[in-house]
Image (cartoon, rainbow, N blue to C red; front, side):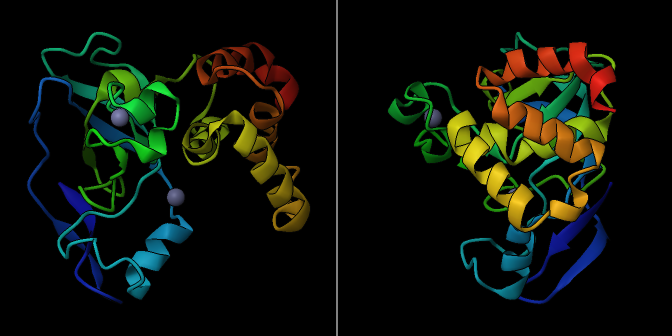
Length: 209
Ligand SMILES: [Zn+2]
Ligand SMILES: [Zn+2]
């Protein structure tokens, strides 16, 4: 497959690399349909993130289609469209149980495109799939959902609301009319489990466009 590979500060290239495979029973492999470029990728490329090993595929936010499923995965199946969050959650450690997935001490947290291969690639392996991916409701486009990968799930809805409102007023005011930001704003200003938000978005999507 092709992927954007980090080769050290200020060095990256679009390389041919081996396809990812299932490594643990809780993994899935997805075909990446849409991905983002994040400020964190730029920090890695600037040399600010020395723990990222050269050779790592960059990227940590995407929409993908499941193409392989590990033996213990029960919540997604081949063919499902899923939102891949920048944060993976083992679902078992103290921090995951408290909902602080970014602090996961069981092998999750921000690992994509940081400590393991990421999502600016044709294919990607997602660990802890049952507790880390979100099925995309029918009727929503990639761009309507993609930005939730970094905002709502990463930080929790309360933090997300504050962060998105800040972004909307300060940075992205001019872009506030775009569908994507409307969706993110909607999700961030309507507290509730993310799955419920996505379901609600599906119902309300005609009003968002
Ligand atoms: Zn990011
Ligand atoms: Zn955990």
